[in-house]
Length: 270
Figure 1 (cartoon, helix red, strand yellow):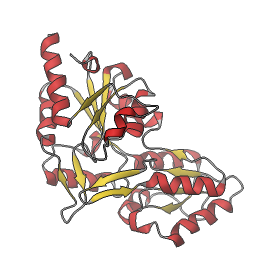
Figure 2: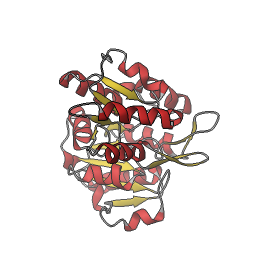
Figure 3: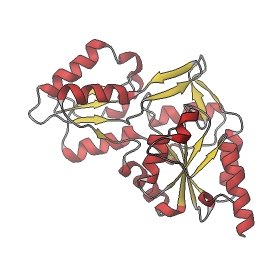
Figure 4: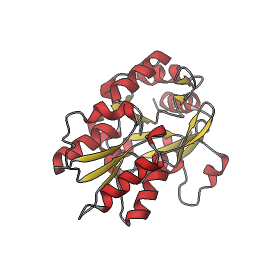
């Protein structure tokens, strides 16, 4: 049996591209077998955490959308970059200039945004106009010690009608223009994964991460000692399996197959 299954007590799941593909008039569509796969993980008593870089909606809005698709999921099971960025700003006394999606703005209602001393960038979609990106650049350039916080660093993601540029492309543009390095609070940052493990009460060697992004999901998890399994759904491309720096611990056609392998292993071990 595949070695990535041994001793697993917790499953960390990417969401977009693993559970569903976003886009279209309904906001997306569930990937076949993924709703049942979640139920099967729960039935055998494995701990479960949804680890997403979703930054086009608040965590509550995001969960409601997934529930409408038929997923059994609650808000406190989701680790997302918006709340992490809010905590970071409160801890460090940061006041953000926000370059984010309109639907994410309520996440920062409680944060002082006067006289900004940092820029927060998320997947702003249509808000990534030249004027808005240039304004973020101007704010950073006007700071003595510019601070750029990015809600992830993905290059692209999958919607129902194709691949879409993600926040990482715009983050890199601001890094280059301002000669700075962003602080990433979503995947692949180690703190993102470690906070999810802490909330579950498990050690890295007891968890497996399932995702469609070979660098941010798989590489990020592996950097913390978590095993990573790459699904061939979502943004996956065949070249991911020969990535020069990241090699997944396992490859599966979809989440349902990953759960099949994991549960078969548990039966054999018992």
